Length: 178
Image 1 (cartoon, rainbow, N blue to C red):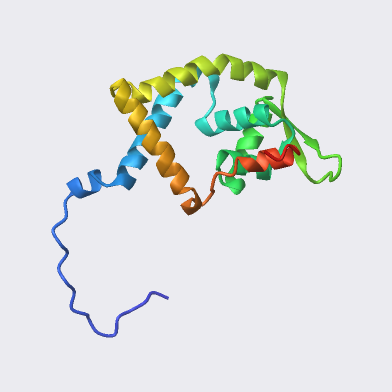
Image 2 (cartoon, rainbow, N blue to C red):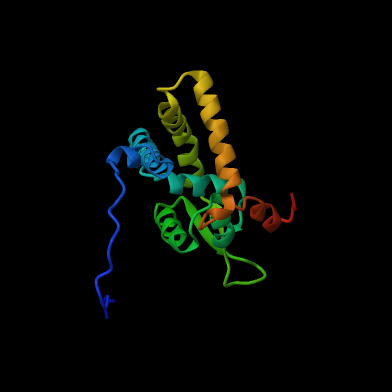
């Protein structure tokens, strides 16, 4: 049932606002840069039919063979409920395989297949081109400054994320403890 006001409340006029205020807002700029970054990635990597998240998952599984989906979610800072479909797509492409954990058959551990390792070797130059293109309009000193500030912002705001980065979880899983 919609909420209704019993009597009209006097409303204050909106302060003067323009789209320029939106276009200059950090959140808007981050969202636009994310759109641009994904577009460039997809363009450079179109021959491989992988999304940026699928690529990150493959790298994490390569780096941490035998990782489970929950820890993979923490390592790549991606929502666990959505990651299931990413894992399914990678498995359907024969890039990863799921094997039951020896101590608990309900837990599935993730491993790269030979095809997965091959696609990673092949896609890396395209990913590097995409990364370079994203920063290409900037001067080298500006690139370095921007990356430094982004790393700082992401690190300082990590806990504000719906899915904070927990890279140390993979090390705990592998029994290396850091």
